Image (cartoon, rainbow, N blue to C red; front, top):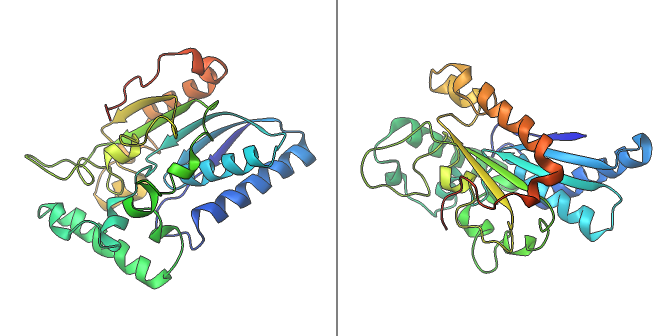
Length: 248
């Protein structure tokens, strides 16, 4: 079974990452009990990748009979979104380097985070996810037997030196975050990475006046990678590690 865990805008959820993961794990256990589902492949877009990881942890620590074969994340902010970084005072607006699309996205996200006051919008940033006591560290060991495919977009770039936590990006998530560049092997032991000249979603493509095929969620080449990731899942751990991934 493939579990599609998607979210168009990282600011929209009002609950925490871990709460979303608990709910997802409960649903998967229901599918096992009621439908006989035993194996799942997670295909997760955006914040869905973090929710999926939280759910995998719950399944593992509660000895659930549901077996996770693989995890594929699309535009997931493994290291946070620069929009949330700005909203939480971690990066300045000047890191947009005068790019109007970037600045408007940052300002709009901050307004939404302030309106919600709680939830994933306040968690999907470097301060919460990264570092010695960050959320990622507490996921160590969870993915030990789960092959992971990471897909990132780099439709938006800027010439010259720039903060890699912002550029290049897909309109919401920087490429290095989507590819988990600074997430260590204890958290993510087996990974393959793919980069596309795409936006985060059809929502972002619409905002930028681009065709839907420029979106990670609509690009047929991305869909081919998704299908292949599921097909390869049973033997993926036997393949070379970090194929296509940036050096940490």
